[in-house]
Amino acid sequence: MLRVWAPERLDDIVLGVNELVINAVQHTAGPQRLIVEKHPCHIVARVCDSWRNPTRVVLRTPDALDQGGRGLQLLNELAETWFVQTTEDGKAVCAAFCVPSQEDRSR
Image 1 (cartoon, rainbow, N blue to C red):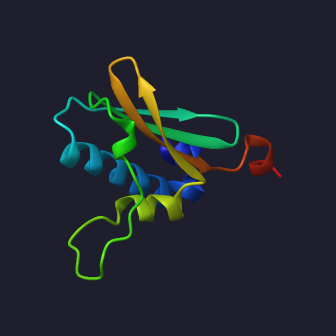
Image 2: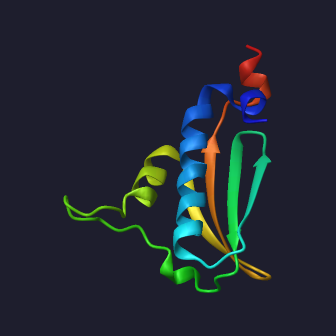
């Protein structure tokens, strides 16, 4: 669907969503769920898990020799914004990617 919804942002969105999913798999026990929604000017991706502590999702600055810790920095550059939501059964780490509106595309 991303090829249809946002072909010009496909690579950025896929890479950003990949980072969200990798973080959920590495840092939570599961289960995880991916939800992608189309809004007029944004694509919003949510990766949901059962971990109930949203304050543990933080942007950090790794040392040059660190093996990891750059996923949220990358997401910070690719997405318009990212945020954490509390859900009924845990939390969701979400990212919103700007995309041209249908009206802008047809011009």
